Every structure is written in structure tokens, then in C-alpha cells.
Length: 93
Length: 447
Image (tube, rainbow over all chains, first blue to last red; front, side):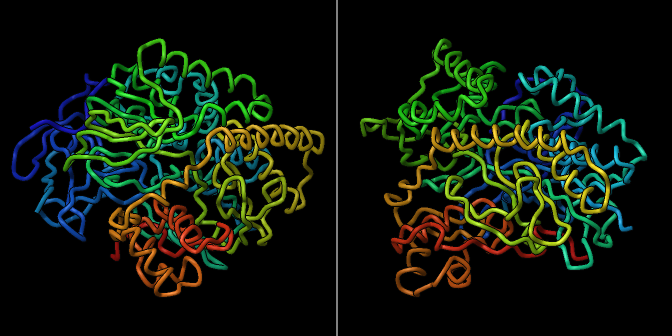
């Protein structure tokens, strides 16, 4: 699957393992949850008010459009949360 | 004495903090970011290696100076990073930080809350692959990423050219720069823009660089529709109203900046309408002293004037706070700073003329276009609230059909809601009113 984001720099950081919808993946240390997901996918969630997809928008903690859950139901604002090793992220229901 | 509280650690907040410490005070500094710098001088997470010259371009020296000065403060301030001011009451400031909830006694408040992108809805602007212009810059600066493989920059303002330039230089494919302003707008603004010749020259340089590197730049553009389930192309009209389309997998959208004022609202500061900036702003004197007792404002959160102005304004506002506490302040320096602010203001007025907010986009917008991203409120719903339900001003329209009711509290849609309200009723924008700030300003956990 092709992601939304493209790395242009800073690709030499150590890898961090996480899962996305059950799939084992890696991102880089210092990636936000949003970066980690958008390197793999084009969306992080659906709008609560319909079927339309969302992928975040402001990337600075203002718009609240990138909230995402993990497998335990904890919720994160993806753009302002750094990815931690072992996170089990869930995108689309 | 209760310690002064500085909210925000961008150029204005840092500069204010340095000034307060210089005067022997120990301010509490609250910032949402993990490290001080604000959005403009935002620092990537640990482990990133690009030098400041690459992150901040022509502003690198100023950024490094502010970072170093702030980092050197150590224990002379009570620094609370990764902390949100979620409410302000007459006697208390409420925080949400890494360790949970906290309550501070309300000392003098210096608000330096910055700005976010100024936005207008276009059909498809909620689709994956559309990001705010400022957000597209954050992706590159703080994460080393482009928002897509082939990026269109659409909107207006100096940031449009700067970020397109930064993307192209970093190796991204910039499919087009689509400016809604006309070249004639810039020419008209030249006398005011001459207040800051260096900045003017820099803007011309970015434009020239983009053109020299084959990036298509168009003026007088009207974006029409973002196509695809996730972005696949953008249709738009050029200055001669000819229909165009550009294939892309990402769109950076932004029409300038808007002041982030919700904290000032909660602190009880009265607002006044700023016609040039088309926004209600906290009312202050020329030093940033508000008409609410012991509340001061500085930087883009008071009025958008950019980073250098924010640094000056931070020092001025801190001087006002100190003077009100009975400290002796340097009157000669105060005068110098005020003169400098007048020049920044002149330049900012020039930018408003050069890059006008293209609110006519709302007139042609169809009813199905989403206005409020959070609550999926359409432009048609707001028109209905105005025309059929008789909403007397924007807060009433919010009560009827919920624009600005969602998690972002109107930060993304509030200005467009007011513009659409005024245009639907045929009123001056000032008469639409402004969405009131509500606590919590951002989602906080209940536990």
C-alpha cells in the first residue's frame, strides 16, 4: 500500500516497531503517530458523521482531525503524539 | 506576589519570558510543545540532524538565538512544556500536562498564543491529502516529510511561496503554486511593503526561484474542487476564468494566518473588530496591555505580524506588565520598540492588501460543501440557519446547526462561518459577531 507522506530527509534514525490494523510495521524513532500511519496509509480514520476518510489537517494540534485509537481503546491526537515501540494502532473500523 | 504566567513559547513568549527574568521575576511558562520555539522555530524531536539553516532558512540566526536564550534560563523559570491551558477563571488557570491536571493561582497573564492557518472551505477540502499550508510546513520541518509525492500549493500569502520553495528545495515535486491574489494586489501594496525591504526582497526571491526551476505559478486563481476519495487532482480557474486541472496527490491550502484568541477570550479580554485582518481581536494598547486587569498579549495571537514583530511585541508586553507591577522600565527602549512595532504593523497591513482573503469563494460554493470539518456541517446548513431559522448572529447559528461546535472549537471554520453568515445576510462582516471561546479549548481526558 502506498502512503500519503514521503520522506525527504532524516531517514537515518533507528527503526521502531508497531502494528497498524494488526499488520507488523516499522517507522523511525521521532516519527509522530500521524507520520508513522501516513507513511503506510492515506487516511487515519473516518468522520463520525459519514463514510468520508480523514488524514489529519493542521499538524499542529489545533484542528483535532487526526485522533486515532489503539487496540485497547486509548485515543491519541496523532500529530502531537510520538510513536512508541509496540503501539497497536487501529485506523478504519 | 503571584508569579506571572506566560502562555506560549514561540518568539513572543520567549522574548517576554527573557524580559521578565531580566527584571528578577520567575515566571511560569506554559507551552503545548515539547520544546520552546513556537511553530516558526519549532524543533524536531530528538535524533533529527538537519542544521537550523536548513530548518529555518533565512530566519535561522533568530531562531537559534531564541532557542539558546530560552534553554539557558534553566531554573530561573517554572517551565511547563507539553501543557495546555484548557481554561481560565477569574482566580485560576487550569492546566493539562504530562502529569495530569493542575491549577495555578492566576497571576498576571501574558498570552502569546500564536496563529493558525486562515482557511476557506472548498469542495473536497476534508479529503485525505489536503493539509493546511502551515501543516505542510510542519511535516517538512519537524518530520522531514512531504505531504505527498506531487503537491499543489493553493491559497495566498507569503507562506504559500515560502513553503513551496522549501518543498522544491528539499526534493519534493511541486505541481503548481496557485495564488488566489492578483499580481496587481501586490503592486498596490508596495508602498506599505516597503516598510520591510529585506522581507520584500526575500518574497520576490522565492517567487523567482520557483519560476526559474520550472514550477508553474498562477495568480487570480479560484480553486474549484478537490477530486478523488483521497486527493487525485484539483480543478481550478485561472485569472482569465479558464478552467484548468492539475493532477496531484496532496494539496496544501491556506489563505494567510489568523490569531489564536480563545485563551484571551477565557481570560475576559474584550475584543474589537480589525477590518484589515477581517477578525475580532483582543483589545490592547500599543504595548499589548489589554483592557482586562493584568492580561497582556503579544505576537501573532494579538495580531498577525510575523516572528520578528512577535519578538519585539513580547518585550513590550513584558515591559507593560513590569510597569504595572511598579518596576522601573527603560522608557527610551520602550519608545524604540514602539517605533519598530509601527513599522511591522505597516508591513502587515501591506500583506493584507497584497494577499486579500478571497471570500467570494463562499458565494459560488455549493450547499453540499463542508464548512465545519469536526461536525460535518455543510455550507447549506449554515445558509439555512441564517435564512430560514433567522439566527441573529454566529453564536445563534452555531446553536442551531453546530458549526464550530466540534473538537476544534471553530479554529478551522470560525472565520469562514462569520464570512458566510455576513454574506448570506448581506451584512458587514463586523455584524456577524464572533464565536465565543469555551473551556476546554481542546479535548482533555476526564480522568
